[in-house]
Length: 170
Image 1 (cartoon, rainbow, N blue to C red):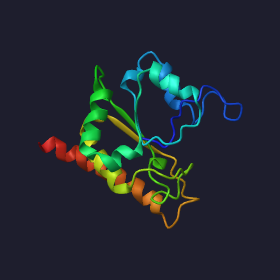
Image 2: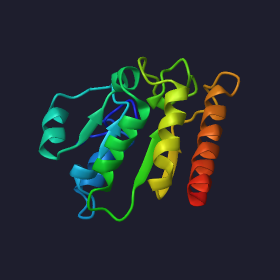
Image 3: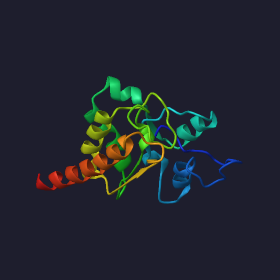
Image 4: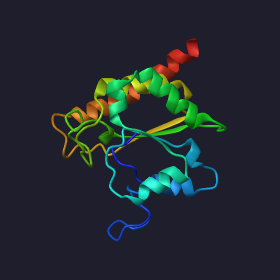
């Protein structure tokens, strides 16, 4: 989940191994296939060549508009189906800038037009029982307003844990 694709091949500013290239680096590994990569919340299409990389590697991109026009449970099922096909584990990385900047002012790279906190929490609750590992990145307390972003991230962790706990009872 991110505002940006993070598919940069190389950057003269950041180099080959940066926060703008980790999804590409992961797909380049033998054990990770682009056909299992789902990028949710993307709205920062910053390089035209990424279009071909996405198509060539069969990456699924779900933009924020889907969250405003479709059911969150349907989006979660679609993402899980793609991510889990033929895999042993699912890794979820949440860049807090997946949220609209109004909901995450303390993000490392604010980008307007994202999803809202309700949509994020609903999506996480749906997929959490199927996710083996989660990380949350780009929460910057130095630029946060009244700990809004930090609070969102903390609740996200709590909701992830709770969703897994209650899934065990079923």
